[in-house]
Length: 47
Ligand SMILES: [Zn+2]
Image (cartoon, rainbow, N blue to C red):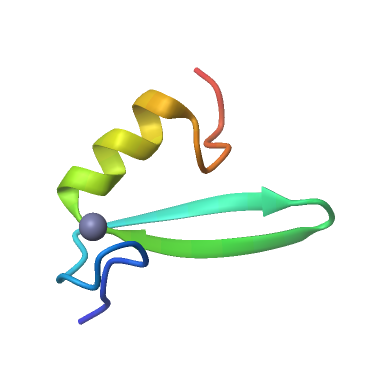
């Protein structure tokens, strides 16, 4: 199972982010996914 990229706990969510011309896939636990979405820290697609 994948680990959360932030805290290392078991991840429950996968997020695809664009970094310039590259696409990165990050895995996050529930908590950090919620934070990432609310803060837009990972440049999640808007709307
Ligand atoms: Zn986490």
